[in-house]
Length: 260
Image (cartoon, rainbow, N blue to C red; front, side, top):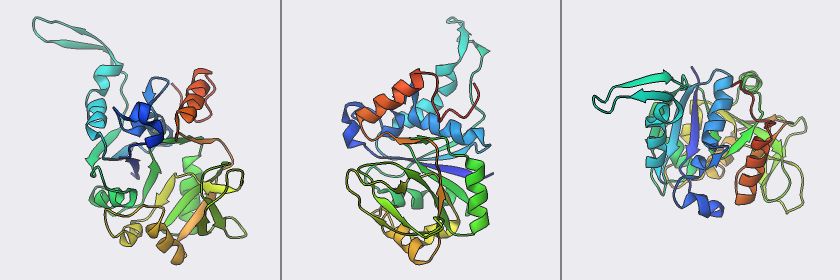
């Protein structure tokens, strides 16, 4: 089974009101961590083996999953004997590996530290703070067809992100560029599919995934772009969190591709 690596070690300075006590991927939308929403997207497509690349406040992530069944299920407890009867276990059929990849480690370094747990096989990788209605099955098929080391999901988002410089057919990445506040175009939306060759372009803890490692992949002509025309939203600020919270509360969240 293809594993899913989730980058979950950052602080999230623009969400400091929330992240002073928890890692950014554990900030809640609709009473559930945004990372849970991302995992539900992948699980809907049959990818249920997760490797969480923790760092800052990783103990918060550990406690959440260690106590997951207890926190979401009804039960009867006999306080005299300690016997617990689960009335309805509302858990998930997921396998989760939680790693402490270091508080100061940057994103590529976190991935490099998880190499042995990804078992030298194809894997998915994404950020722990962005949701989308990406069809993961189609993304995987696209990656297999183009036979490159890495495929990223390109999305449309105005403002504050670095745009992608793509080939004419839109399926190969030539580079990144900074963009102004009102500059349109496609950006890196995460939801990567990777081959184990990507580990060879990571030197160590000090590297950001989007910088030297991805530049080296581009220079080797090994980065593809899967264009996603649907919904995508990252949670970079309290404003973003409120947008996601309100959409979830409406009962019409586009990223909710799973059935309850």
